[in-house]
Length: 119
Image (cartoon, rainbow, N blue to C red):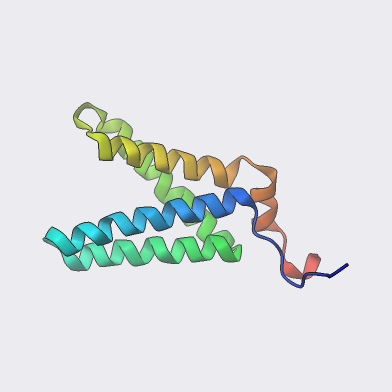
């Protein structure tokens, strides 16, 4: 049997990373068409990319900040639900899914608490 030197990324973490990458791609495409504040949008896109990379690598800090930002996004979306459009609802659902994928499955929790030296 071939031994693997690297840990395999759990499926919930992969899905959460992909959701963050999609969330980064949408503002990036809108910035190119009509972005009044391109610097702010670029910072947001770079932040999402860094968080997705951190999740993939198993960074506990990336998990913490992704959870904080996603929870804040859900909270803002719930407060602003009266004037929410389809993209706002999609943002709330996506952020809720990310929080759930990072906090609920045991494989996801193990991914961020186990160091590579333990395995």
